[in-house]
Amino acid sequence: MRSTCFLNPAEAARRLGVSAKALRLYEQRGLVTPVRTAAGWRAYGPDQMTRAGEIVALRALGLSLARIADVLDGDAQALEPALAAHQAALEGQVRQLTGAVEKVRDLRADLARGRAPTAEDLTNLLTPRPGLGVAFELPWPWGGERFELRDIPPLTYITGPLGSGKTRLAMRLAEALPGAVFLGLDRTAADITDAAHATRVKQALAWLAEDGAAPSEALRTLLVALDADGAAALVIDMPEHGLDQATQEALAVHLRRRSSKARPVFLLTRSNAILDVAAVGLGETILYCPANHAPPIRVAPYPGAAGYEAVADCLASPEVRARTQGMMAVMSPAV
Image (cartoon, rainbow, N blue to C red; front, side, top):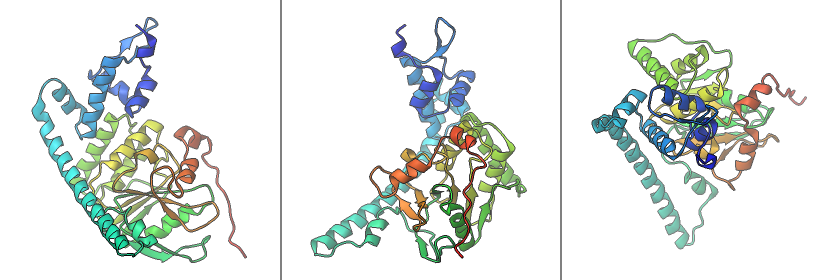
């Protein structure tokens, strides 16, 4: 066989956008069978990549591996619940996009009448739907500057270099948002509130394991907090803490699958497995804290946008983050 037509597991996983651990799990479940080289190594050719691509697509629709096996065996009806849920999600996105189109149409009409759009008008184009907002005076090191965050989406990332004040911003957000909870690095698992809560956590753990996550107390603690009732918003300091790369990647996918009506979650992170800038879409936003202590800015997830390169530069892989764990910048307030 020509080696150029076949990929090793790491390359195949990268092409498919999953972890190598998830790919091995698909093999263990009998969903895809890689070929073996003369030396006995696994390899993925065109047929195997097509099959694996089907599995990844079905996972994206919300099917468990057991249901995927049914679909691949010819049970098309197993797709119905997932397609219904996907349709509902798409209809929600259509409503958001329709609102955005109306904003653009109004701005063009104003422009034709000689009224130039304001910076606020243009910023509002990046917010797909009205929702929760917050305003407060920024803590040190910003010196009391006014900060406003409107139309808070279900998922907000807070990032920035060491010493930029991002942790202080995250804590201040948790204080300013009524009923919000801040989950720090010293987190311990909250109590399961009822049977429904226990079921949701169990299902989430099973789902993440199918995506290659390693079950752990750190992961369970996050899921208990994410699925608990009561808190109006959740601010999580370093969700990657205690999680390997495959688990971080699976967690990021899980968070993106949440309902567009889910309570807001803020993720304070510098891991590019949690914040994959290229994957940021509707219902997500990025807050960047500059190194020079300029006020935090909202960064659009595309090259050329203000702050985009700075965000990309301050993120690192889980491997690099593990090497620098424990390092921190120490600053003292000006006298």
